Length: 79
Ligand SMILES: N[C@@H](CCC(=O)N[C@@H](CS)C(=O)NCC(=O)O)C(=O)O
Image 1 (spheres, rainbow, N blue to C red):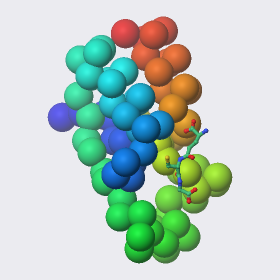
Image 2: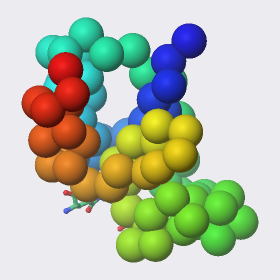
Image 3: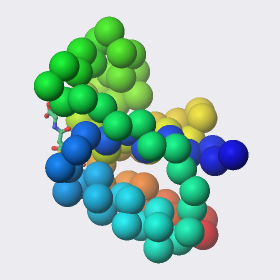
Image 4: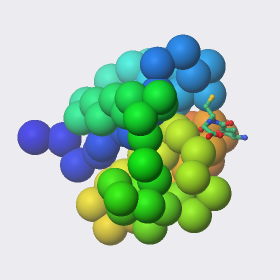
């Protein structure tokens, strides 16, 4: 089971960048696709993960790394 969960919306190039990095490092993750048309950030609790309300967010259980660059930089260090 993966410790990572990627929150993303369809068509997000920012999310693709994180997906490519995960794939390149052969890191397994759970995919949490969000329907951008009906997405209620407050109701879903998403703002607790990223107060900016944007995707992608990579959740590792305790933390949420938001943005396209932060997760990729972390992977370079940890993997
Ligand atoms: N600079 C951010 C940009 C993130 C961003 O703009 N994400 C878009 C999807 S591509 C988003 O969450 N849009 C939803 C919204 O703004 O309501 C990053 O690097 O991740």
